[in-house]
Image 1 (tube, rainbow, N blue to C red):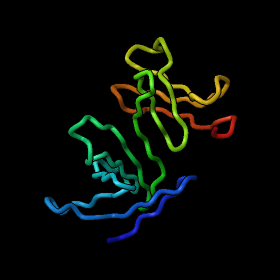
Image 2: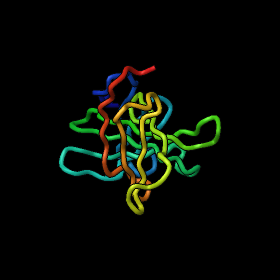
Image 3: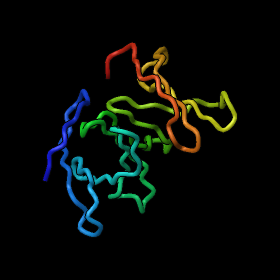
Image 4: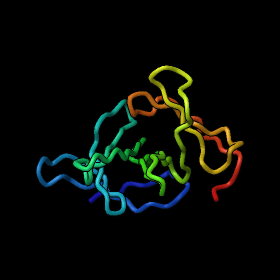
Amino acid sequence: MKQITSALYFSVTCELISSKKTGRMMIKVGGYVFSQRSSSGTKKRWVCSTHVFRGCRAQLYTVFDQIVKLITLIKTKKGKTNIKVGEYTFYLKPGNYKPGRNRWCCTQNKYCRACLSTVDNKIVAIYNEHNHEKK
């Protein structure tokens, strides 16, 4: 088992493992396993394979075997979906500013300019510069 490091500003326990069925490399983060979906040069995108049958859309990104981004979809107490990127969560802003494109804003502070955009449930743009500390 090869260890994989995290470049995130919070600690996660992770390791690189081999799939028993296919022999493909997978990343185990906590109790969840991610399989490689795509790569571009040294950057790789991994998707949740532990709960994929339940519709889990958690993703993580690695560059040179370092986790640089961990993205998960979470449900709020009211049943709405938020996107969690690292330690921060984003809510779906009502009204689309472009057809087919959704804008998500930081849930922590209404004056925070951090946001991200999705098209077909894929993040296409992210501005993750927050003007506040994590609550």
